[in-house]
Image 1: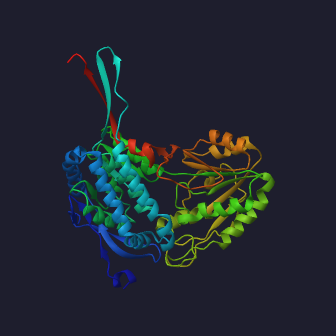
Image 2: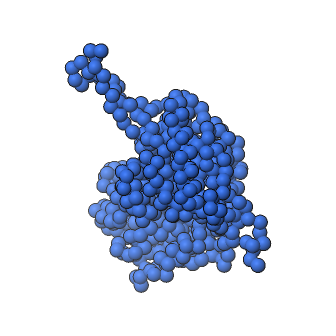
Image 3: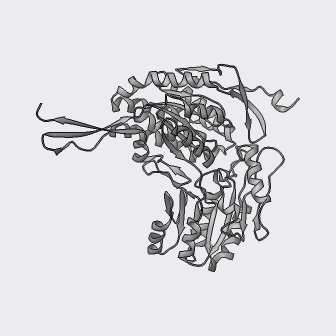
Length: 483
């Protein structure tokens, strides 16, 4: 008998129309703790009947939620933020088990940001406005109305299950939409807890959670009721969603992969850059679309920089959630461990593993902080997203080559430039074809600024007023002054 069979598995349920439910046909899937590789819970494997029920509940709740004043919606959303704050330790514990995240870093780096983001969108609820009324034709006044879209089908990823759920439901609810959200099948626990918290606050049907796999997500996107589909996930998943949504012209919001270039010039403070890039590259086990994992270093400091980066990697710890000295925990699942390992196993002969490059331990999905140098622009590990604790290093000669290498991938989400030359920083920020450019830092996010990319990193923005507007539609109203 295995450990998972001996262990009492927790039962997770869907949350539909204000109540927790099993899947209509009783199907479940096991949820695995990435620290141990053993199952700790079961979750519904939702089918068409569950998707129908959730969408119908959201549609029934939409008119009343839409018709609340922005101030009334704001009060509800502020209560959600207050309850997240009150139940923070529960959220931390569940997310840590969900993902294997370090408890201390989840407490300091995720919970405060999530609460702040919910409160930001609570304020945005009261800014649902169009442009000022004016007369563009004699005897006629034009008015712009911003309105909610309707029911939103949302699919969240497994790398930041709680935070990405917030990025989706907070702007959607603030704008007056109702929501059906599906967490990843590997990380449903924290989203189910969020349903419990929100369920005690919002009217029934406004917020619904269904658990399931890719097939469940496909049913959501193809369902007739939602007016919008939003997904954070892989490029392949985003393309499938866009194709499915095109069949009935649903609006689509896609936040997909990334391959962030970190462009380091020879006037950079090497020690400072290495320290910050190490954190930004390995935080959350590198499972972040904006992670600082593709470093481009000017040739004059290349060898010194690689040596310092390899030393920092060797000193970086991965381990269990309750270990206060670790920067990151395990990879999320067995498939992800296999993917990251595969990139290293397939490295070309000219590549050199400067640090790491191996699994840690024989239990769970831990992988060592890794640095790989000697790479060429067309190498697989440069062109494709690893999504693990692996930092690659390339050398460049001048600004032109740095820009060529940086932009020479299919992704375009985030980037950073490291230099003391202000003019150079401004030139690079213009030339880099990415949705975000950090200068002498990498990875900070604030609720007031947009997050989203170009090219195969998707379209639409999270956070900020731009993210809020993505969940609205624009209506022109013209009235005759003649009565």
